[in-house]
Amino acid sequence: MINRQVPVNIELKGLDTAKPVSEIIKHYITNNNWYIDDFLISSFNRKELEKINHYLPEVKKGLLIGKRNYFFLLKKFPSLFFKRHLKFAEKIKAFSIHVHKDLINGKIVQIMHDNNFKIFAYTANSPKEITHLKKLEVDGVFSDYPDRL
Image 1: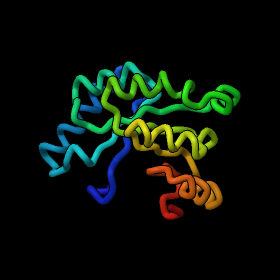
Image 2: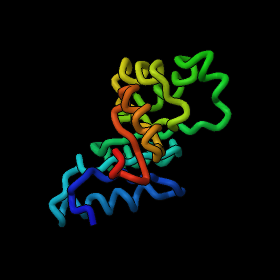
Image 3: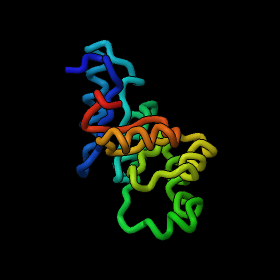
Image 4: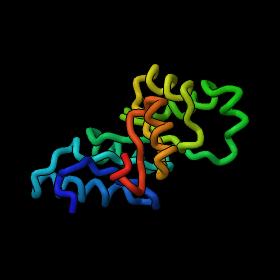
């Protein structure tokens, strides 16, 4: 149990998960003295992020962006690549955008910050990866080894 020692990132992975997750968060706020700022909801699934925005609009939301086969487009046209993602993030009033560690470079960090979004990298586990991401000035790093952060 983390008992409010750190914020909790909840990733919505399945269909129709927004409503039950919002109910759990409301329960913790009402019954366990947690605050809405103790939670961050993230997902690749845009429909679930839209739903969580409906059920719990004040919760922080993070749009996940995976690496798939984006390397060429990203290297040549980073602003164009992120334009669609940024538009959706603005629509749901996202707090942050969570980008696969292999996609992040200084230009991407600058684009996110210029558009008033926090940028979090996932999933960095080696000390070398974590040091590199910190040098790029990402706002946060998701890791399976938080003691390395």
